[in-house]
Amino acid sequence: IGVEITVTGLETGNDVVLNDLTVAELTGVVVRFHRDVITHTGFLIDILCWERDDHVAIDGAILDTNPEEHSIKCMRDVPECRENGHGILKPVSDGCGYDLVYTFDEAGSALALEFIDSTEKENNIIVTVTGEIDTAGTMYVETLEAEDYQIHEGYLVDYYCWTLDPDTRLAFDGADLVNSPQDHSIKCMRDVPECRANGYGLLQMNEDGTGYEYAVDFDDSGDEAALDFVDSATITDDVYVRIQGTPVSNVENDYFTLSSVSIELIPEECRPSRPSKSVEVRGFLIDLYCWQLNPDTRIAIDGADLDESPEDHTIHCMRDIEQCRANGFGVVVEQDDGTYDLVYGFDDAGNEAVLAWLDSTSADDSIGVEITVTGLETGNDVVLNDLTVAELTGVVVRFHRDVITHTGFLIDILCWERDDHVAIDGAILDTNPEEHSIKCMRDVPECRENGHGILKPVSDGCGYDLVYTFDEAGSALALEFIDSTEKENNIIVTVTGEIDTAGTMYVETLEAEDYQIHEGYLVDYYCWTLDPDTRLAFDGADLVNSPQDHSIKCMRDVPECRANGYGLLQMNEDGTGYEYAVD
Image (cartoon, rainbow, N blue to C red; front, side, top):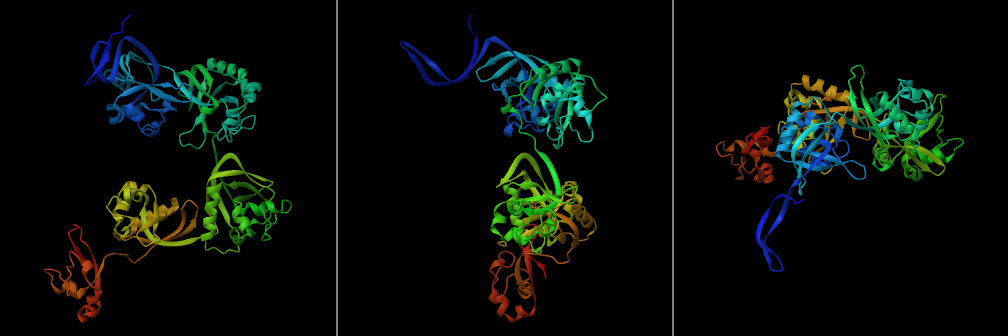
């Protein structure tokens, strides 16, 4: 058959010439094919969210990897999402994610909005569309129908192992299903009779990102599909799959049930990186060189017995001996028998943070360092000679032996993190934090709720920087002060507490300071009052408009200037000139 088309393009005045043929040329050609109505099924998305950086939607869904998480609320309730058109995705050829295959015409977006406004689905929005297409990837949609089935990704698990120990969620094969579901073996799911008999489901990361939860349950037909899958699987563990199924009403449980389930293993290169386990331990800081120096006795260079009394391992040893500085650090933790064992070594960033603290601390260098460490256990190891120990990344170390005192301007974190550190009340916090008002910190809910911190002057004297962010207890003390003080601005406090390598202070005390800090032009009071109409000084300087012209010679050598006192000129509120602000 022939091909009826609609063509759009630009006529530039050039010609196409072929033998004796001369015809006007079109550029920027888009061809719509009227004889080719296609059908496509895929995830419905709005174009605004798709075109955001890294395809991360306004609601946080990553559309090129997990479009099933894109919410109907985002597409329905955000005006920009409604107004910027819609489209449909397809899986990419290697199975690793999704790409935009068609953008809808206006009629198609109207059909999409009609569906979005009427559906009761919350996410996992899959539709089938039919229509003509053009060479620019536009579909001229004729019909749009919602699909009942859903698509999910996660770790396959048997329900018996998930419920075996509700406190720990340790599976029959010992896998930690909350933190390391990739360790759950096919052998366990396939060969343990209780695992085969109690059904299957899917583990997905929980909302706060702290671990996996049982999110999708299979009905009997889905359990049969799971059994077929584990019986034929050639892998041993890391069973990360994509499933498709139809929801079944289930109001009794936190998870939902799918029927008519199909299961496919996601290619290894497309799976998420092996999930890291978040840990927090309290123990003593040691350098790895000293720990492996005498494997039989664990006696460090400074004579400390590291597996009996790591509190004797000195700052001096860890900081000043080159081998100790150069070979990294770790944490030893007390065991059930009262001895200590090395449980984690730190990654490079963690080691650098520890060295920075060791080099700057004022703590007694003849004592040990008790610490609390948080970080991620990724499954990698630190290796030093014959020593192998689990590595922590994202290390934050809190030093319990170093209670510091700091005095500076109190600020709320929300205002500090605004563009150019300009607070909601207009104060420029990195140059003039004294102007930050108590009213802003006290009366703006977002300022109250987003934490507090304290500033320090930068090393060159030009402004201020955030030195410590307060922990929750510190912010509570800050709010207690903010709600009770009668000061209006120039809020200077002294805080004491332990600190960690992330710049958090665990505040123990917070006391207000009575003094204030101001910046401005020094002036003698005689010159300021010499001519109230013009404010011209004895040396002719215009003190309202050009106080920088007022000379030291005038303030120093004119007896009336020396005799009548001094003060500070600051810009007035409307920015039109300087005024006598501080006497």
